[in-house]
Amino acid sequence: MALSRSARTAVVVATAAASFLSIAASPAPRPGAPGIGDPYFPELGNGGFDARHYDLSIGYAPDTGRLDGRATLTARATQHLSSFDLDLQKLTVTKVEVDGRSARFTRHGDEIIVTPRQSLRAGRDFQVTVTYGGIPQPLSGPIVFGSKYGWMKTADGVFVACEPNAASTWFPSSDHPSDKATYDIRIKAPKGLTGVSNGRLISHSTKGGFSYAHWRESRPMATYLATATIGRFDVRTGRTPAGTPIYVAIDPVLKGSNKVDVYAVTAEATDYWSKVFGPYPFEETGAIVDDMPEAGFSLEVQSKPVYSAVRSESTIVHELAHQWFGDSVSVRQWKDIWLNEGFATYAQLLWREHKGTQSAHDAFVEEYNDIPADDDFWQIKVADPQRDTMFSGAVYDRGAMTLQVLRDRIGDKAFFRLLPAWTAQNRYGNAKTADFVALAEKISGQDLRGLFHDWIYTTGKPAL
Image 1: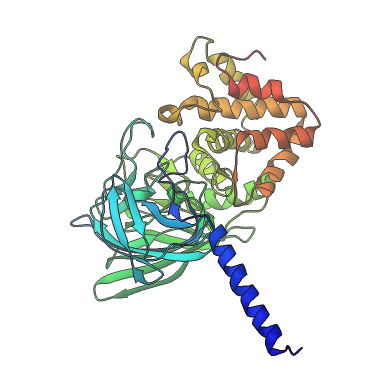
Image 2: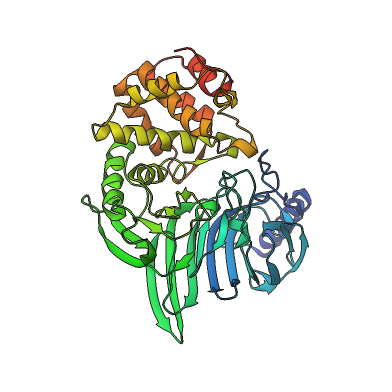
């Protein structure tokens, strides 16, 4: 269609006026919040943007403990940003770029405040690249059983297990499980060492006295589930009987330390949970077994749980159950941690039932009867356990008890419909306790508010 000159002029004037009005109506740029606002960790995560993808390149020198890294975060602005924060603990930043152009940055505690040359409009995708280095320090305190956690130096490398707030000890991030992203993780280490991370191995090579590994996690992942564990490992790969790729790396120091076949249990449990909880959510399953006695714990690292020693069959099935409950379906806030730990602990009871050792109901009754009413166990409010007791035994065991009480109430048919429905509804996303209660009521057709009130929202030993 052709327009006359006067008509074209009118269109230009109208368009210019509309653009001016649009600019005038746009909100003024403002800084993103320094935290997502989780009451347990108010300054973890960051406001004003949504993390989409991390591309991490790290080099580690075990003799000195030094890490040198370059991290590129692809994100989408959720507001008109004049500046934004990244979480990074202790390490030194030497350069920051936004969309390939150098950007100003300052430091305030564990926050890196980035000011791009131009403000970032809401809805716009952008990339921020941070060059940094130093000697990462593990965290300590009451949060994880009194143990150190995070980036932990070993005799031949490093053991990396970061729940709940230690991912930012080794890479700049929006360090909260509600801001999930996909990952490419490239690890450089001295020749003879293997770098193991999440997802699947894209490439591995040795050159000039160094080993290089490139891993890719193409499914959304919470920051605390990322790892870059480095050491001497015996690696076995293959497929589970049902066909899921499997990668198991075990420190040779631990060979023959006990009779548990980590590879076999991992394969069997992955396939069994896929029947009970719904399809396995990731591209690969596996395990990273390192010699790290100081840690004393294991963690459900996405696609490959990390174990600080060869652990029991029960621990392995617990961490693999987390691939559904905690990894694929992640908490919206840390107070909902029972949705991870209570479910994975109940999975241990289901495994014993599956093996014909003891029914989950009998195990529940036995434990319930063994714990006196005046025990501190009953004084933790499972649905909001508080930060320093978020990993208390009650969160695990009373959380598991709650699921058995629910199963007894609604019956096996509804209960075993509920579990895969929950993982399907929230696959790769975030959820809260109220979401689970609502789904349980929908599937069972029952009012379950009293049950959950007694078992997770209040203290005291509930009556059976």
